[in-house]
Image 1 (spheres, rainbow over the protein chains, first blue to last red):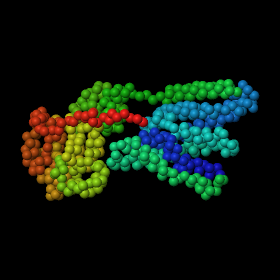
Image 2 (image 1 turned 120 degrees about the horizontal axis):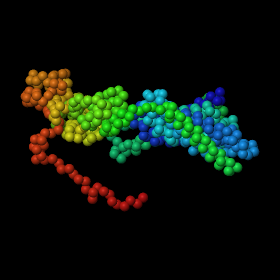
Image 3 (image 1 turned 90 degrees about the vertical axis):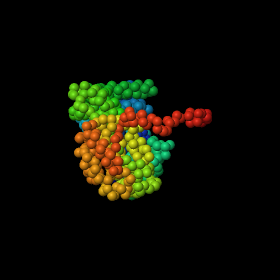
Image 4 (image 1 turned 135 degrees about the horizontal axis):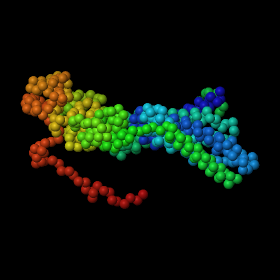
Length: 234
Length: 303
């Protein structure tokens, strides 16, 4: 029961309360760049959700198996060179950034080739977005959140498992989609408006993004209320 | 300890590089998609304006359609005849006769000719103004807020005295203006010569109603249709059958032009040499050169 409540809160938190775009301000470049039309925004949102889910799976796996102190693969390899108790303390967390970027870029490349071969229609609809988001900061950010919940957690029982990581990744992508689609809807109507010359283009979009972020501030604190209502441990 | 950490880091990154390179290289071969080399050469033969005049999203889509779906090679309006020839050469097909397609604005009323025009304080866009009533009495005619002017990438259509006017010398016929016009009064028409005849009105109301809203609109009297078969009255509006319209019927057509009580049959297109000669002596505003002494702020910036 507690686990389900946790999952639910992580999902709501990633999608609405701590929305990647409107709370943490990551992934702004596609948010400004591809929010001109609602259908394009949906395509971009779908692609980001897809990639972010894959990336969270890979980052959780690599962190637990290789990078964190006492990870099984590292301990096994280091065991050949030093006594077992020192080998268990080898810490490779400094490698997280470079490994994540490396893995995300390669997996997106792989997925792109796969989709191009077997799903030409899907490739046509979001193939152009895939290379754009290989190094999108929202994706790296999701990996880093997952890392912070796996490495250096005081109580080992609180460390995130694969399920929670995937939920965070997927619903982070959903939150991104929500934000970019709202933005695209507003920008479509903006075409009918007479915007002062100085505000045209990216400027007015950033201002709207700011106002949207203020609106999303209304969700702050909803998570603790939800937790109390669902009867989970505080 | 430190040495081992460094060694392990290097080892892990190196092994990841080896594994991922192998996987990607394998996938590249396994999932290889053959691209027809003709698509690339057709793509290079196209002008690359990505204007959408052919009906496809961009030049790339059109190139694909030409090669894979045997789309006709004459659809590119920007490249014109030479481009069609180049594409036809690549595809090994013959080019039929191609006509340049150009927009015609089916409205001829300037501000003075429009009745019931009221001050409009909303967004100065045709799309927005078309949503409300009372901007002007004629619900068919040009609104004059210049959505077409903004849509044009070639600076070839301008609102002059409240009426969208095409500059046929810069126009390439991409059709962006026709698409954006909320009242659909711009049509893309084949030009069999430099100048073609056009009906400069879109009002489908009965003659009396037209008279009440416009000083120049077509009243659907049918005088033109009685003189030449080229004209037909549809929904109280004279229309021209461009398939039947040729240079030969000019005589009849000229007679119809004279007979038209509202003078709504006009020739549009690139001005002929005589017209240009005639217009040369007329007063026209000089093109103003920007004066850099006054427009450039050369005060030093101290940030």
